[in-house]
Length: 589
Image 1 (cartoon, rainbow, N blue to C red):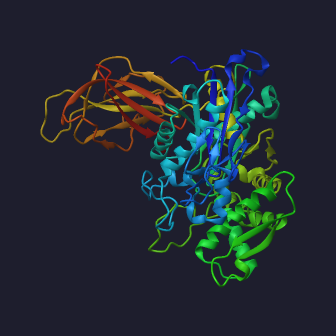
Image 2: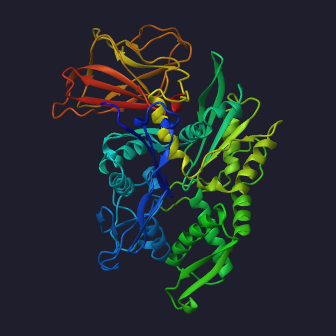
Image 3: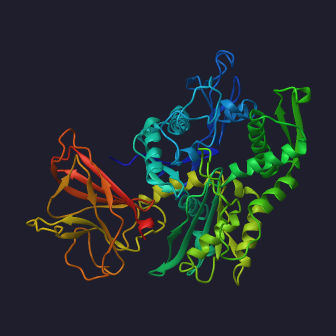
């Protein structure tokens, strides 16, 4: 496809979603790389729409006749559901009808992510949607806002969606599917911490080279509404110029602003000294979130009101009101989620109850500093002398107090203090960085490297006579050479292969850290012990369109995504059919 005029980045966040864009039609002027954020029209009150840089990732499912006719109108029409600011506000009043944290549910393996399960534990009279449908609703709102304001449709643009670095293959595929369901067509994925670094590069322009030096290791600490994402980026040198290389990513952590909102809600309930039922407590969580965001915002007040609507005789006056002070919020979050811990301590394992309610697999230890300590200790080979700089991202890290505590803890683990890299907006950086990355892929900007530390191979069974008790010999076909850059793809040269479809078959994969000269398509036979390591096999039954047991002649293509996933594409001779098999090179390493 020809290159589109606009390069678009979207942060489909747990708490807020943001769309940023670059207009490539401005040419090679200094403004060519200017990244803009779309002002998204949304309902802020019934009958009142306003444009905001952030679209709260909340979906409200109104009851019949809950709103006056026509009061849900937006510039592009009227719907029967509410997305954005009004949805979040109504969530504090009617919590059983709001879908929140859809992104966290999208990556939960314990539920049917395409099933109508949200709002979770809602009353029976409330309609339900799937995490996939909720995600698509947020993207569809962004698409409608773009199409109403911009000269070309969003579906025709080059689009990059940011996801947590630790999203599994299913969550990544569902994110792509949500984009398709929203009418956005094909979308590329990029890791959120990596997008944050691209945003820093764009914000600092040529000055970033003055902020870091060769040998530096940058910790990207991204604490958002539902997840904590950690990455390490090393600063190197090539031909006299500084280069950046992403060296490590952390585990998937469902730990972030949602946990903090819950902690604040418990603290407010204790302060109220009254009984709240489950419905009211869920409303309190939403109210605590709103108060927290206002208090921690730049220029926020010293205190904000928190109101819980009444529903039972135990609540005098029909509603309970109190104030939440900024000092109390900061103290609760600093000590509870960012405690001072020694280097290498790692997260604590909690005693588990045998029977558990199905839901999101939240991290057991709420101490983010312990998760960071464990992550840094696991990758001591990347940063033997410690972390030299930290880049904060995510709405939680807007707080000066939280940033300072995290930097102080990091500095205490080593001989030299950690430098804080500034210049980005924690709420907007991921979307801005995703768009910047798309521009860099066009050759206009610095690329962050992320080459593989191994070469990867797929096993090909030799055509040989059967021998009792012996498995047919297997050759290893190189798919990805050592150091292959993430975000690149190759078509393997050479002969066709037979692909078994319609019945269970095993894909064998191998890795090697010593065969550094093999190229895509290199065939390795009879290798010495230790030269190739067999990885966990993958069993799959590929669709045969009703012709089970066929062997289809195919050519092979390999793609190494920005998320470290090696995709093996098997393309039929007539190219009318394609099959994909994938595995994570990071887990394999």
